[in-house]
Length: 132
Image (cartoon, rainbow, N blue to C red):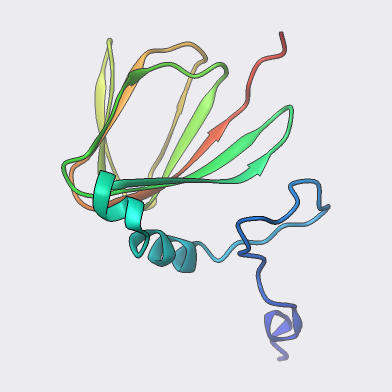
């Protein structure tokens, strides 16, 4: 059986690509590795790269060193968090959950929350801003 993926063009991993392209692909392991090599990773312990942005959705790759935290904040719309690597603590005023690789959560808009990297971690954040 022929492997169709071998005949496909390489994934678009250029950080400056046009968000308007009809089809975007990402090599997430490669982007995570690249983020860990950046100067900002050494300085702040965290990298956030917007992979896709439109009026209705924003997808951000977050890579965090163990022990770093995203302070209490809220999103303008519902979000999802999908853990790609590592172990995260996700905390709201009402509950706390621990997420590992392959796990995902959703959160309603305007819910205050914070995120901590319990191990070195990477996750995809999807935000669907509500229309004004």
